[in-house]
Length: 366
Image (tube, rainbow, N blue to C red; front, side, top):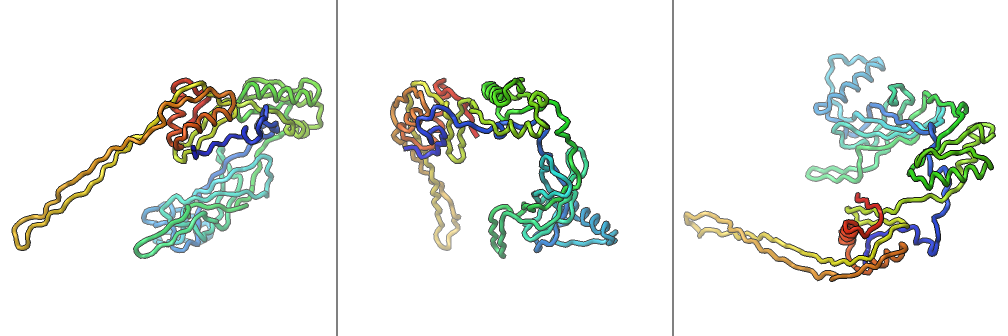
């Protein structure tokens, strides 16, 4: 039997006629209500000799000199080679409607040849948005996601010690200007555009308010008329809209991960009647060189004679097996499991079935 992971949510509830209703807030993004990415360049200090080698990372020395001079320490013309500092890139995301003084998480990543950021402390680092303005300042102890042990002849690294996080490590200094209360209309952008899903969202909203307040513009956009909702503010209208539930429509899709052998099928996947034959060919080549030594005290030379053994094995295949046309996901899986092949072979079979035009679904390979 196939051991590939078949994640099929439709099988969790047998005889289910349709997908479970999903809240609108989990299907759409509200236009303008989004986060903003932040990035900064800073310095981590306090490392236990695992920092940047300043000879290979001169930018670390530059930022260290800048920080020291800002603190009143004159290092002009001085040469120093500390190994407990590392230049890093600091990234974070500014959530929507966040206010000055709030704290957000940041990620710290080494950009030089530092071996580890364990135990380091990030010095005050301004974080800029795409417009070049500073919106937050980060500082704090780095929590690295790995460990490293080094000896004289060997070293062991677990995880990635050159990257870490600082929970609540940045304080918001500037707010993003966005007046939600001044909007007269608001667009709902579907995360997965689909005409049927957009139509169901429009119908659900209009049914809730008892009048036409929403209109589908295309497969990915539904426009909401704030004035027609007769609510006190756009925020009140969104509270009522986002908790409405609809049944999203999704395309039939098969997703395979060739590295792990994972196969994921959607509920609407269908396979037409098809015959499949599969077998494995194994080729083994082994090198066994023979070393011939000359006799003692002779003028001969050592000669290495190459010896290669090759073996070809044809493993028995499944023969010609019929996969009946599946009218439901359970029948499709039952037909594929009847082949009794390995996960890797199952991926190849699905590719061939798709090429033959018998797999009626979008085929995605990762």
